[in-house]
Image 1 (spheres, rainbow, N blue to C red):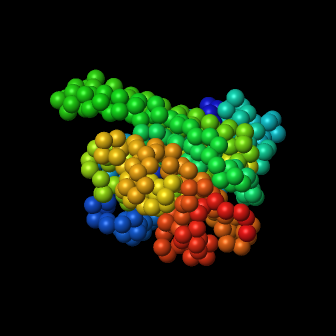
Image 2 (image 1 turned 180 degrees about the vertical axis):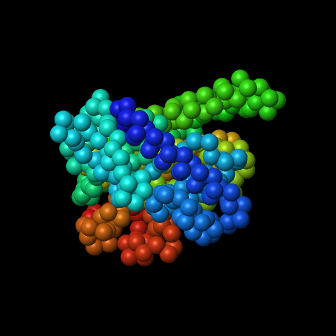
Image 3 (image 1 turned 45 degrees about the vertical axis):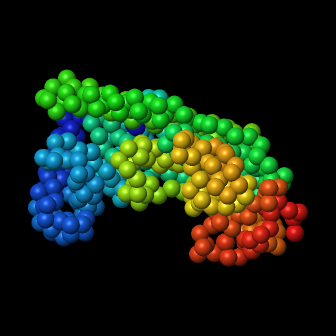
Length: 408
């Protein structure tokens, strides 16, 4: 986020006109929203008429349509304010002869103006990224600020490390972590990270329900504090997700390990549960945690493997059977109906994720002729893969073999 220097009266007039026209396009598009069943239909209903009357470029009109479609469920009575997102065709970053950083913005075909940037601590940090090889992907014009999106291409690190850090993401514990030794087939360390997130989420939910009841009765103060509480909750979850991701990264660096995290598809699973369970699932900050992990793994050159979560919660690490297994008394425990072993569900799932990552890695790199097995308990691992998984067909061949054996 970069702060802008004060604009001249002429530039301020151009910027105000730019925002006013973009807001007008937003609301023209919003008026046609009830007649459109898809974003593509909304485009056909609005694009021609808007382009014939507006001075905005086609790309910016398209961005307006995308904003309307993305916010169709939250905006009820039209747009009152906006920000303008521009791709690299419509801006240029440069430095003047006096050393002032600026963005040259094209607001209409062949019509431009320049926004000077304040050289404060925010710009110093941004400039450090640019010198380190990051590229500007897009910018968003805000009130007296410019939000800059930057990206950098990283080479995929070679994944030949002895240890794997398996991460299971859950509603009660944000991240259950297992450090797994692929050479000995043993669990080295297990941790619970982010348990406070679920506790604070429940506290926020109770407080929001009380405020919502007062807001529904017409209390303006309740509406004000409800908005404030929502921002506070979002900031807490984002901060803790970043902290948990950092703890996982530090753990991986201390063992020189790769990281494996389950690849969840939460949206498609919600209909299978009751309302209370769905509420817990909705509050899992899985996407934020994954993005923080991806960013840090790129920075520290740590391999990150996203594994299918198939049967990681149902698979028994002692006998290899697959069953519902969860205790009817305590859902946090896994009770195997085949061998009777009782283990913590989250720890077991993080171990299964680490094992899946290690097996697929060794097969893909040709380190064994068949596959490496990992437990002295005589466990089969074929049920950790979907029946139609290509890896399962070629790598896991011995259904009755124990998980731990000498390398072939």
